[in-house]
Image 1 (tube, rainbow, N blue to C red):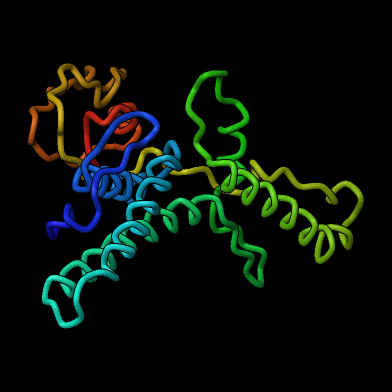
Image 2 (image 1 turned 180 degrees about the vertical axis):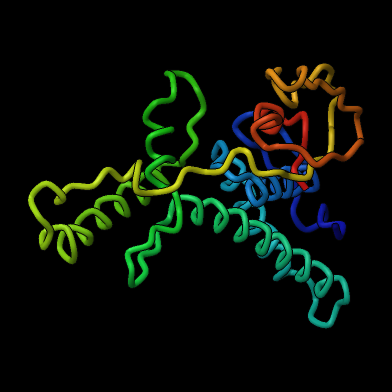
Length: 230
């Protein structure tokens, strides 16, 4: 990352004071985790807001740099890079609860399951969706149900004129394999439970090591920040 401290200055989030470099590092971590996770992760709306404020601050300071200054070109490239990471992070989240209707009414994504997960979370647990994402997903659900009813369901026999979206849309595949880097050493991670054919399989994860593992196994470690998807 280019040195942007002189253009951006410090920004204080609701939870902690971070330098510009730490702020962008947190964004990149959230981006990679969201990009490679098969399920929607906890939303980072405060982080997104801080990064957007940071970009605005950098843009304002960039206006004060003399034209033709090489430093201006370097910082412009850094601003564009941060914008790309931020846009990709938000796009990755949207793709996990957006439906795309094809000519054969094939449902690509699994937004009903995201809404169900959000609805069933316990009081005090962090929200998986920002208010804007929640409203977006609910609107897509309503529009999809109206669309299906108007173009297909109303033409079917009465006993086939309803649809359970949770059953119609595939669930996220939590058993897919992901690459990860260990940030904090972990002991006795259960990889495979005991069955009639095999004993349980437990491993230790050393700090800095990289692995290919089933996502379901390490999902809690992704949420806690102990591992980073890569």
